[in-house]
Image (cartoon, rainbow, N blue to C red; front, side, top):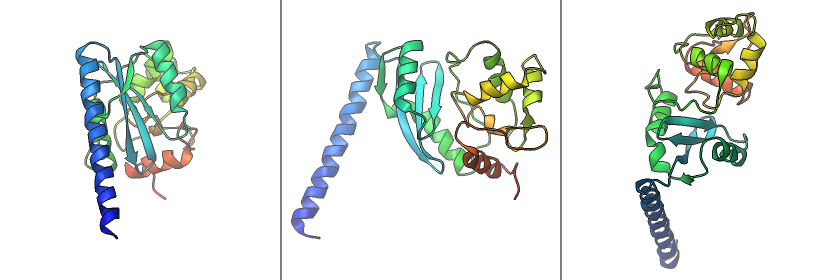
Length: 203
């Protein structure tokens, strides 16, 4: 590598550092001025790059690659607040817990959840799902029953399919009564991966 190339690479690193420092300062100023209601950042994981969105109330969105992040930002802007800014440092608590989970150091999440993107029966289904322990599985009918209506298992499946915070609210732990995987918003390969990670699925 030539000295000139090394100089340019170092200059690029310095520019990237300055840009990141400026972004952090800008997001802090926006928050201090009451102009930041939703912050988002990303996390590289074994399941691809995840997008994390948080509000002062807690985690509001966790998205897999290919889920249409721009559409989800539009939804959050419409239903919660248009004051959205890329501010990765404000997602650090969630990202650290996800890192720990994927590396086998964490079995439960204790970040607060902002439930404003879910309503009614769907909210009850997701809160019941949040109580399924690490390493365990449940069924669509059981989750529906926990949410107050055992016969509404199809509606429970729809609620799980639109879960705005997968992994943290573990909809991957819900299976068909006969043991079939059912569906999953991130695809069945990701569902299998998570169940194997937790020891709930053995090949």
